[in-house]
Amino acid sequence: MLETKQIAIVGGGITGLTAAYYLQHVIKEKQLPYKVILIETANKLGGKIETYKKNGFTIERGPDSFLIRKEAGARLVQHVGLEDELVKNDTGKSFVLVNDQLHEMPKGSLMGIPTQISPFLFSNMFSLRGKIRMLEDFLLPKRECKTDQSVGEFFRYRLGNELLENLIEPLLSGIYAGDIDKLSLMATFPQFYEMEQAHRSLILGARQTLGSKTKQVAKKTSKFYSLKHGLQSLIDQIEKKLDPSVVQVMLDTKVRQIDKKATKYHLLLDSDEVYIANSLALTTSVPQAKDMFPSYDFWDDFGEAKATSVANVAMAFDQEAIPKDIDGTGFVVSRNGDYRITACTWTHKKWPQTTPENKALLRCYVGQPGDEAVVDLSDEEIAVIALHDLKRIMGITAQPEFYVVTRWKDAMPQYEVGHLQRLNKLTEAMTEQLPGVFVAGNNYKGIGIPDCINQGEQVVEDILKFLET
Image (cartoon, rainbow, N blue to C red; front, side):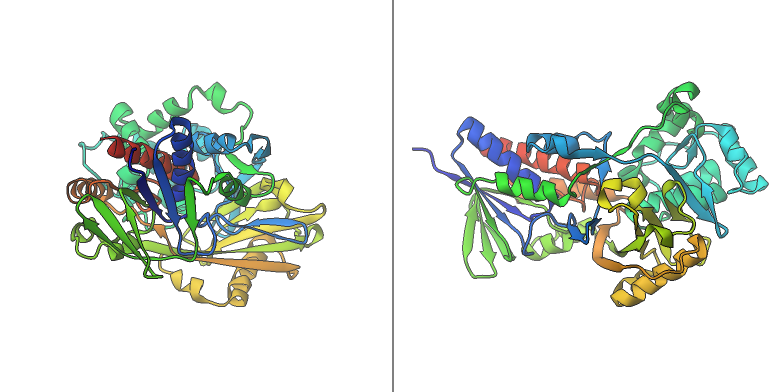
């Protein structure tokens, strides 16, 4: 009789949950003699995915959507039987707040990179000097191949400081919430480096990527998916699908230490119980993983794995309380202003199903680099900051019916320059010193929901391959 092999997954966010679900699927399909344990320190699964409902409003405390073009998200939704719940975002205009004014995002923009010149030339978002500097991209040579560089260095060379600060930086920081002069280009947006290398001009490369001008100005299409009843419904559905005879879930449980003994790993839990595993996946933060393996120095070689803190405040209003209810999905804020919010989603416009009729739902974000202390303020103080800025920007003077503040401390990993090289060294060291242990999650290869799901899928392949050999 074959020995039952034990698999441990430490961390029950979307990465770990994906790994547990797909492992179960393969184990059952192939009738493999494997068991899985999923260990999570919190009292719930899903990590940052959390949906809150009140008075008919559906409020996402973490991410509110995932990219359609990255197929892993929709694939998982369909696999668990929620494909009928998928909804696409409404495609109204989006704006950038520059010099105290909301400017419509120029048409033909690929993450702030022009693919059509005239909308940028006629935009009041940029000075004449800034527009001329942007056009120098057509003349500048491509830079010599580099292993890595910062996002800021790359875009500043190609398009100039003004386009970078007024448009590209607010858009990119909305994803990574970090300092663009420290963020690694190759770990975050390598496709832009590849555009430059292939086409010399970044504008020409972006234009080629989007296709012909005729296609660009065609009907706008949705870029994001969500679920009718909130993203939490995906977490709940996966949890329902887990079979206790294959996957054991342990909540409110911390792994204090992991020791390698012969070919197996001994996980010491905070209950003093020891769980023995043949293979395991770490989907936690790097500091947490380091604490579990204190005698291995390759974690130090990986670096500090810095993470920033952010907060958001969702506010519910009567529709009449929004005097400038612009037809759009929201705005990002240029860092040149004196505002403390970094972006605002007009959720009732972007996701109409979240908001009762004749109501409005706005979600503001705070916590830009250099102002992270705002996250430690009280709920009331954060709401006051957001309302102060919204009054200046949108003329809102009414108090919200209610507000919900969510803090994510040290939750946004910063892929600083050299991240991929450090990750490769970490992976090589773990393969040699801790065979059968794999890392995945937003600390490593992407922070979006589809990126984390992809990593969960890859962990399944890695573990199964390891156990088979």
